[in-house]
Image 1 (cartoon, each protein chain N blue to C red):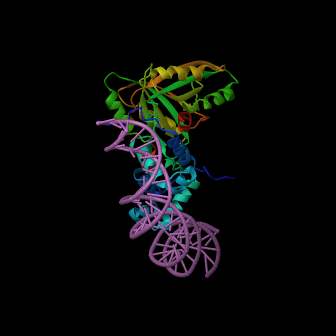
Image 2: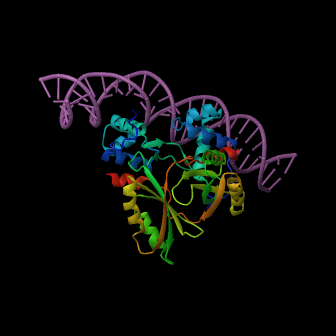
Image 3: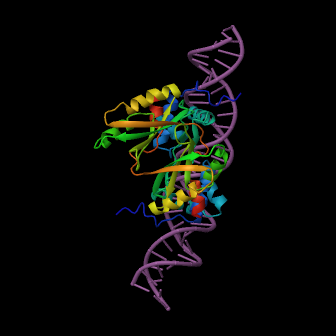
Length: 161
Length: 161
DNA sequence: GTTTTCACTGGGCAGAGTGTCCAGCCCTCT
DNA sequence: AGAGGGCTGGACACTCTGCCCAGTGAAAAC
């Protein structure tokens, strides 16, 4: 059995310190991290490997800003789906580049998706493309204005210590 | 004037190839990237610096998986706010570790926030803590079940070429 | 109580990559 | 024609990486 997602494996203090350190100074390497944490280099290397293996650290790929890429408008759309059309709708949504994320949800809506667009006008085009698909009954869209709390995970790490 | 977010600065083909390359192989360095792209190392270095300076690449910090950290439950809450209580509510939400993200939105709800919890039962605790705050009139929560399209940005880069 | 297992230490090694220069070239804008 | 900007290919010293090892301590298994 894969023991990837056992929740038993809570991270310990050193893991947390390492993660927080890398979070605010990603450019430092393993060696510098070991120096700042006061442990041997091999330890940091092993911890990192383990965190990666356990899936805590998913990747170190660059984090891109859609706004800087020319898509400053973000919106959320709640979709209601025709029974049985789930798989088709997923495929359709996945094929639209401006759909950055899709969740299926409980509640009145069946899916929640995050959209981006080049402008408010462009958002219309995106929405048309998203909802212009048999299988989607209704769509409720709201535009994101401010982003008082940008996506973050580190508070969980801090409270895990 | 800061010219950080001019939308003029669309990325070119080499930028896009570099970003996509780093996205699927973050561990390769500048040198290996330059080899794979068939350009000089200095070019890759300069491109990366520019992408970072322009904010296209926000950071290279590790991407953490809340589920692997022990928070496998994700939910979205739509909040209705008392007029004028916006700032206080933001502060309150920011102080809750399980609140991973907050947007202010158009539409019937005033804010949309992403929550995580250790279990469905634990979600109750989180929601109580989130909405137990004067200034929040009503909250509508839906639990995320599947995640057919995990957060992604690269399709935008691909279509930018 | 002993033995095994495991993580961490501190060290060493060769190889590779990094940051940082530079001169030269080519294209574009003025 | 000249200036500016980006790319090349090469150089330099320095640092880091990946990988190995023997020794230690502590906790788990026997």
